[in-house]
Amino acid sequence: MNKSDKLKFAVYSRKSVYSAKGDSIDNQILECKKRILMQFPDTCGDDIIVFSDEGYSAKNTERPEFQKMLAAIKSGKISGVVCYRLDRLSRNVGDFANLIEELNSLNVIFISVNENFDTSSPMGRAMMNIASVFAQLERETIAERVRDNMHALARKGQWLGGTPPLGFESEKLEKVTVDDKVKTACRLKPNPEETGIVRIIFEKFLELKSLSGVSKHLISRGIKSRKGNMFSLIGIKEILQNPVYCAADEHALLYFTEQESDVCFEEKDCTGEFGLLAYNKRDHHKKNIPRNTVDKWIIAVGKHKGIISGEDWVSVQKILESNKTDNRRTSQSSNNAPVVVHNDYALLSGMIKCEKCGARIFAKNRYKKNNPNLFDYVCSNKIRGSKKLCGSENIGGQEADILICEYLTQELNQSSEIYKYLDKLKKEVSEKKRENPLEAIEKEINKRITEKKNLLDALKMGVNAELVKNINAETVRIDDELKPLEAERRKIEKGINTFEFQELQIELITEALTDLRNNFRDLTLHEKRTIIKLLVKEIVWDGESFHIFMYGE
Image (cartoon, rainbow, N blue to C red; front, side):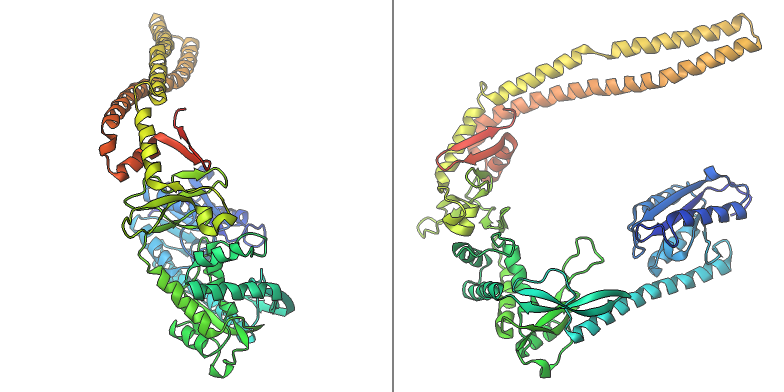
């Protein structure tokens, strides 16, 4: 690319955290603009587009402004890209290499101010790739240092603070350094009252092999969480999976070794007295901080007492893993109660709301050998915690399905509210269509077109400088007034077409409802469910009767 060509530059700046210190966004932009104007003096400010990502790391290219810049480059709007330092653009050599390759293929130059690299020269391209390798190496070194710190802490059995798990309290010990940051190290000490709850949870799960069974047991005994709430299934599972309760013995050592975890203790440490600590359990580089797989955990012996033997803890993990492979199609209500949603016999499962507690109501099979499809609709809170959570009466499943179907068939009569609602909509659309605001807009547009024509005709009568000046000014004014009027006309024309489409839709819905009324009983269970969801806003059970709320009422 010739430097004398007119260039359109993109300046890219980035900072990992919101801060005015160091290489701030403003400083980066200023230095980049100086470089552009010095190296390409024919460039003006209007030829520079700024893209800034603040609060984003360079570990990948998922940055909003960076992606906008890439789109502008690919569309041919950018001739050159300038950044203050290479690591502002990327710390990943693969991402960086791909970007440079794409810039070269599009004949877009790249300049890094701090490293003084310029892809217009072969040496600049070579040096830039080398610098990028070092940028990634630095990132990998930081990650390795963090992991080394974790190992050091693991060997000491340090608890890094935060909310202690159920059964423990946190006791401050000393200051430790993690990734150049000073943190207060802590030790876990038992909370006797909560420790008893943890033991109950593990004992009942080994007995019942069911999270919901444990939940019911806790509810029946009035056992609540630290915050005074009923334990959710997710909360119970988190407790059962936490190695902090597991005693460091031979069973624990064998389990985590087989799982290929990073184990920081040996057979001589397996006294069974102390519990375990797990580091690197979650991936803090990803959105929502997901749980890492066990093979990425760092497992060490802590300074706290173990609550559950390694043998029992490992047995619990195997049961949880076995339960994952259960092929039954189940779901959970908003209160985490396990319920059957998809089946070939219950029409309304999950579609009814309990008035007493607000939870959803699901189908529960009675498990009669002579009639396997005999079922009831039961409040999910009642399923989860018996009458302690909700005392709403159960509903006979078949009877409820028949009742709702008969009600909907009646609602599909021509005299029903839904047809009245459709008639009302049709009238409203017809009235809007008849108003025809297009005539008024057309009148205004024609008025200005006539004005413009008269001005042009005036030019034919005689020409002088003052007249031309006035006519040009008036013509510009008229054109400025025409633009919004023409835009409004297009909008109205589109609206009129929309009214016609809405009329057609209402006619089709009316015909479909008539056809549906005549054939509703012949529909499959899945088709009936779909129709109910389209027509019914809510079905509420008050313990004695249904309250059905239709859309449009």
